[in-house]
Image (cartoon, rainbow, N blue to C red; front, top):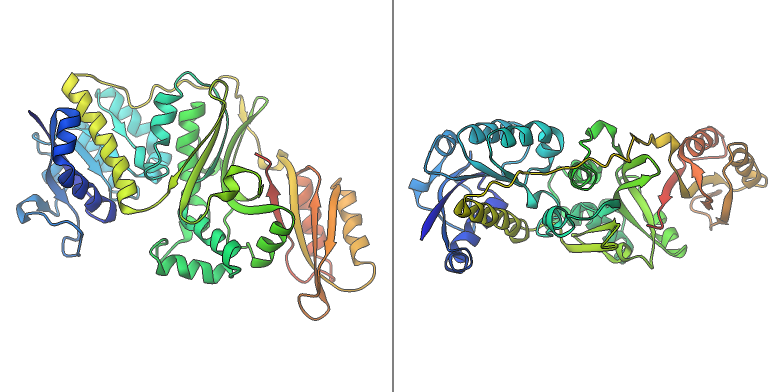
Length: 431
């Protein structure tokens, strides 16, 4: 039985999960693939920490060159994350004739064009199933299962930490601060959860999905990104009263010749499938021309979930090696009907709007006058009970309005003495 040797750089949570699966499932995988997949060397800068799998000291190293330069290693698995030195490790491995498996969404989102070109030039592949949705097979689905389809839109709950926080707020009526603290104590959030909470992690993943669906390599700078840190418990509860749940959505959709690309908190009707996705779960809702609307759903975090996706890529590569096949990393065909990215100022949607205003006659009329001046039409308005002394929440739902007009109106209203906090506006998506 032919042996395929793996070199792993990054022996953290996911890396140790990969080693555990390859060890525990060794016989099972051999029967399914006809190959013996073996971890030959593992590299990590910290080899002293406790892990749920142990290795012989001879298999461990702190020097990545021992893996990159070893001609007996067929596949490099990169699981250290970040841009550097991960990028350099992958490029050097490709130069040495190795195929690559990675879960590094930030690196591929920002440096993917160069890395995919390097792989193609050398007849090698970069597989990255675990980079989006952990164990959810979204990459394989888009590349293979939906290969004949053209895509219209992507709506994704792509970050387990943010989804957990919003779910806790909705389900248990707790504040943002308390929900985030619980996410950290439960191991669902890093000590520094800023990339998750601020929406950057979701944006990285969205860029990869856009590349697969629309054939466009978009810079992170071209994505509108807004996180969830300003979402209050009051907003969550008012949204529920209106028949919505708040989710951090990553959205890409065609509108004529434009492509909208954005990540932000969004009100979704409770009747929509995405509204029921709770906890650390992720979901990707894809609209296509042939298969119609599809939802892929599963845990978006967790050691074995992510490690399962990495092992899936390893098995795909071993089968290619056995058959002597080279499958390009991506046969991307750009969607030529898309001519430009739509600027956020030109985007239109309905909005949930909340003002904290002084409780006195004429306030509502003054706010409504400014909204009318900027062509913002209101579908409903509700003045809630006093939140503080003489200050009340005014909650509105607008008809569809242009983003630039809404922001100009809110900036004007925010300067009034009667407004005691910055207005909150959250976009509504019917999806």
